[in-house]
Image (cartoon, rainbow, N blue to C red; front, side, top):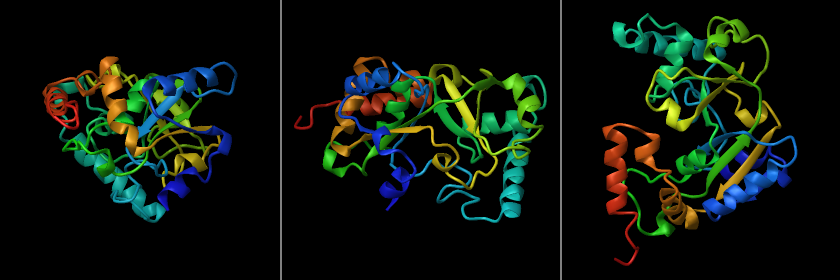
Length: 260
């Protein structure tokens, strides 16, 4: 059901299958030869509609009324904001900054994560779960890399362009912006964030400029290994002890031969 729903609003000629990282980049580079072309990418471990964490299934504002959604969103940002140390940014962050910082640390927001780097998005699509699985048959299902394109603004232009608060957009969107490097994960991931007026709508219903690269579960493990050989892994994309620990855990399990 989710598989069909995720692809229902994407043109069939823009749905491609990926069996290796090299093949994926060949497909991307072919698309780059003529506009319109994807220049912003999002990896998802499951092939489902692109809703922000605030409103997706299991999110705090899933299937809420517009009024309830706004209340929950503001409450989440207020609660997170008061936990940010005063000296962390040198000033008390506004709602936009709080949403960006919170999103990069797992806070449910209306922002949707993307990357300028196709291979970073591919990594997040096939990233190992909490416990790496040796048997590809036990993978959860198809992963996906979504591509899109749109003009990007810098964080300093956000308030002027989009309004003073994330929920104050005056048009349908979507809009893209590049956050300031206030978190060590933003730069290596080449982070891009998107926002649109109604976060209850999945991204692919807001714009028709969407491509989808489907990664069948049988290829997840080999694509992870291929990306690691290219220097794309958790230790690089998630700097710090968390990323290093998860990478080492993967190296000792998933990277080993399946019959070792």
